[in-house]
Length: 101
Image (cartoon, rainbow, N blue to C red; front, side, top):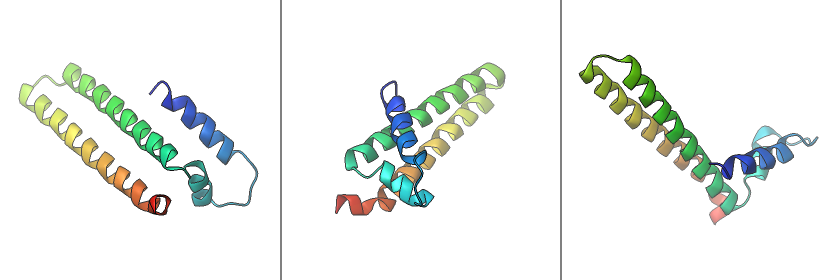
């Protein structure tokens, strides 16, 4: 994540802060127009989700006293974040499927 986040900031700032008449979707496609950049973006999103899950797990472990409720909450957080990430990754690949053709 240490190397992906500066790449993300640089790539998206170069794309979105340039005056152009392109729409948001066209600018987004321009920022991730290469399969390697798309892969980096998906890996960055995975790292962000993983970091968020670990943070929520620590909060649950610290503030939920009931063991059963704590385990249930942490399990729900892990499953929901995994499902959300998988849907987001497939949506991103589906939206940019013409890159791979």
